Amino acid sequence: MRHKVADVRGPVHYLDFGGSGPTLLMVHGLGGSALNWMAVAPQIAMTHRAIAIDLAGFGQTPLFGRAATVGANAALVHEFIDKVIGQPVILMGNSMGGHIAILEAAQHPGWIASMVLVDPAIPGLHVRRPEPVVLGAMAALSIPGLAETLLSRRLRELGPEGLTRQALALVCADPSRVDPGIVEAHIRLTRERHDLGRQNARAFIQASRSIGFRMADPRFWTRVAAVKAPTLVIHGSLDRLVPVAAARELGRRRPDWELKVLEGVGHVPMMEAPDLFMETLNAWSAYRIASQPAAVS
Image (tube, rainbow, N blue to C red; front, side, top):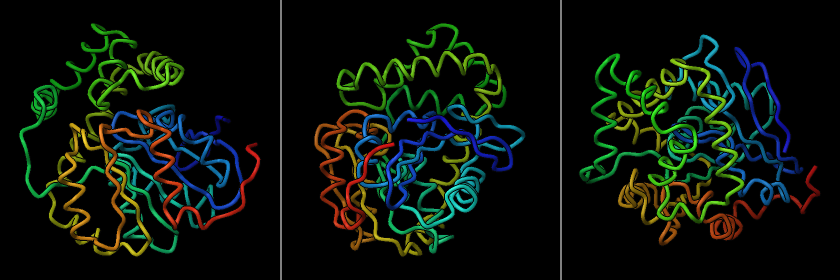
């Protein structure tokens, strides 16, 4: 795993896991980072070139005068594919990253060979009452100034380890299944990001508000209909943030897309159940039709 930085209207940090063959670009979700893919990327690099990007304002990519909205980061992903990778990719996105993947595939079909959506942030047919902790966060985000204050206070109260473990408890059905080394890597990153102060909260709030507006925009389904790339949807049955009913509605609208529901798994199956995740990915024909296994560099 190599840390690299590219210039895409400012510095963009990404993890290069090596490998050769078709490039698979991984895009994290809200509040996440390229580290979210650590448990599966080495296996992906056995048959593909595996790259995970930090979106603007997340991980080790600073805002640098850029916005952290969904639209701005979708544009960043496209420029990264164009300028850094320079060829069509398999685009894999989790949560907000899945939403971004759909936008990219709809707007720039020539750059996307195939797509994997992992618990993508999409509107559902029936909206259920969110978890209390999610509902509280949504209310806070709607009040200018309050969100920044509350997020900064929360980090001070819980500390990097407490905040990381609280986040894992929300996105995992069973956070104890996440590899301890990966948990520690996330704690270290949270500790480093604490030094960013208000910029840390600003990116999260911009992205949160943006994905909220986009989830309510009916034009999203027009973009889904425009996607031409073969697509696999992997969704945890116990996802608290995006209920599995939303994935089933997506499958109803795009019956040509393959949907695989992972039982007993939450919002980040690539972290919580990496072996099951890779078994599902390897079984997908569009992923298998790639290159011969290559040594990881």
